[in-house]
Length: 110
Image (cartoon, rainbow, N blue to C red; front, side, top):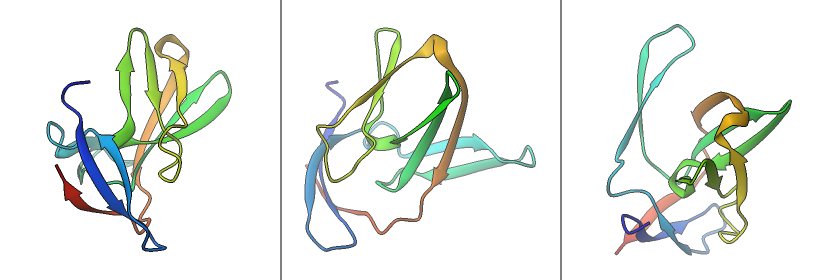
């Protein structure tokens, strides 16, 4: 976790939130679109990752996503950065990435 960077994010209500994020080492995300085309997304606080596992779906924010041991650990909320979900890698059957187009923007990176 030494590659994490302290960021301040401005949300739709204007109140900035600070947390550690994956931004410096992963500036863009290469994905495959629904028509099998390459899509490149800019890393931002509005990028969401939806994991399907055991018949359930969990959404987490990409900049708060980590692989730890044999699990994916991530935050489903920008407003509560301490809230984390853990999903064993072996249980994941599908991963979808999208820009949620929420009004979150980095305002400061330290």
